[in-house]
Length: 202
Image (tube, rainbow, N blue to C red):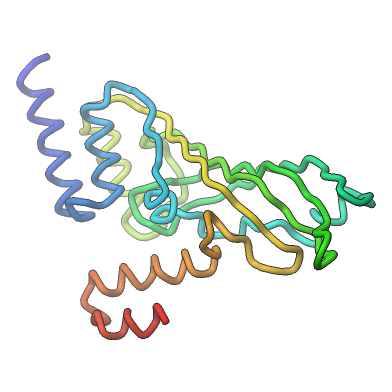
């Protein structure tokens, strides 16, 4: 491994920390591309929240009705793929979210309920895409300059949804995930203070 290759990786690792923050997921991805040798990156719970899909991934009324009638105690398998993107810069681009699990009728409330997992998949590869703001320029620059290896990104998290309600992702609603991600960004940028965050958390 020559010195120019090592310098390039070190330079981009530092750039990622400066642009996105030292502990950010985006900086971790840049570091992994430089030093991970193409090995997959498995997202943990907090990282899934940090890069959560910007568009809705909940089951629709049509999804619930598509399974047809359910007899008492019966469960039916359900799965679908949703194409999404993250609003967190430098993380996931156009990626796949697979909703996979079972739908059943709650014996007490008689409501239809989905229980299963969200499976996230993406390839970190500096590909061309329609990215907002300066993101596409940064990716183009990185594709030309940054030495490293593309890698796959995987993430799996438990999910539950009652028909007509927001999906809970490991006990937290999708609405809360998006709101607190936005709060974290505003706090980092100094646009709100910790007292305001405390009030929002109640």
